[in-house]
Image (cartoon, rainbow, N blue to C red):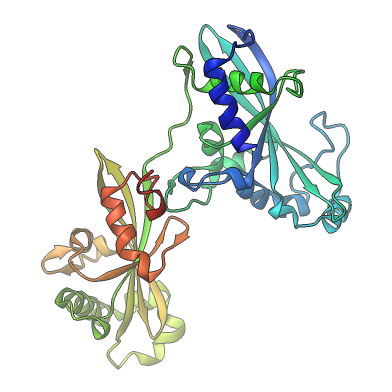
Length: 365
């Protein structure tokens, strides 16, 4: 379908367009998302993540699952599980996902609203399964309060609801009012192009914030010759040994209280930061440091370290860490795990690449 869409968009430039309305009132539309057509540069995948978010709540019946958008018949837990049992893949692995919206163009302004979501699957015999419909009003608070999982190319600070309202995902417009485009596929692309790309139409879509959650491990000096790593580990070891009660209060009492009278050694240091891009330059903000003692993590937030006035080379911890003079390996960018052999390339890309093209495979695109 994706290749057909590209071809059709090309045809739009040359073929005679069917007449499009200059304006229309709120009109029901149906968007189809194929989870395999959501490009990695988007950063998130609504077709994958929304079913995962809602699955447990459908099972607990905390949210209503309806047979159709008319909301006349409810689907109970037993019927839902019966359908899933007959499916070729579990509900959360289904390929197809649908968003029900209303669109409006008035005085050259495009507005839209999200009404709900439909879920489908396929049985082992190839029969289509209609799992049902969830009304957006029942999940709007949940979707506003949760950030959608994101790969390295995405944003760490984007809620499910904002992701929907960015309209920054791949979809096919499969219904507009009573039109289903079975006889005129190109008209579907023309309506989509008019609403979301036509420069004569004004639209206010949610802007995706340029933020990344960066997690990295500062290498133990026993495994690394960089003198900065030894300085950092020594500073933190002095801090924990001078403040043992604080460490016990931070979660170490279960495994360190019997070691009060010996020096504690730090096995590893893991740092979590939030990076925000301004004028193509990253601004680094410390969120948390985990000090591993006896293999167990002790988490200290930025506010904790500032209150305790922890210093490294006469600098505050956040200031010192921002210099990155020590040796480290990236562990994660957002929710994507980074392999050790990829760490240098991804770190370089954070400084040099467009932030939706951190992976090497997109460097030349």
